Image 1 (spheres, one colour):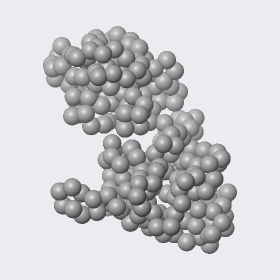
Image 2 (cartoon, one colour):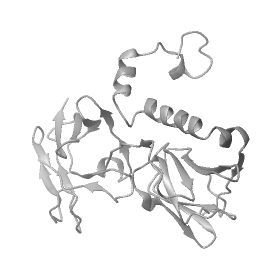
Image 3 (tube, one colour):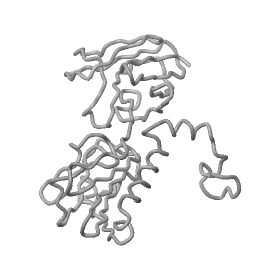
Length: 263
């Protein structure tokens, strides 16, 4: 990150924010920690990265409208005959889907997650294709194939706000490792908004009210609210701002509570 030629990517031509670096050093799920884990992986398997063969896995996900292959998520293997890594990464801001790749002769009956979410239920075999579930926006995953005892090098700690304010899509919340909380700012008009918090963007771990309520459990601005992982027909929260403005959603990691404040 440096000043100079501004014909390229502006984000990468700014002065280095050393305060941000210190925060990322203390955050095990930061981009800095991810890159450290990838470097550690390279050092752990030097022969694999030096002499291994990289093979791209063709997409087996078909767009229901165009009938063409979908390439919003990419996957490839690197193998030297002794060790094999499967690398998967999201190319775009997409999620809440299942992506299929041609597996060829790759046997995924036993694997370990080295980099990615701490949830091994996201890789399976469907017919002759590898199915990868619920890739978060721009997420990177690395699997070790053939051994289910490998230790994770990096766990992606993320949280998403999903509700009426974004059409039940997903907006990633900013993690503050010092305060151990997730934050997201939203411009809202006076209306009623149902919502939940979702850890993996696939509802396998979501934080709602834990109370079935057709209209959603009502919460007020400035109120600290306890969440629950209990599932039901409708365990949403309901927020109705009294005026237009920017509202801050803060989710506290330690006790799984949240608060909405008017900025």
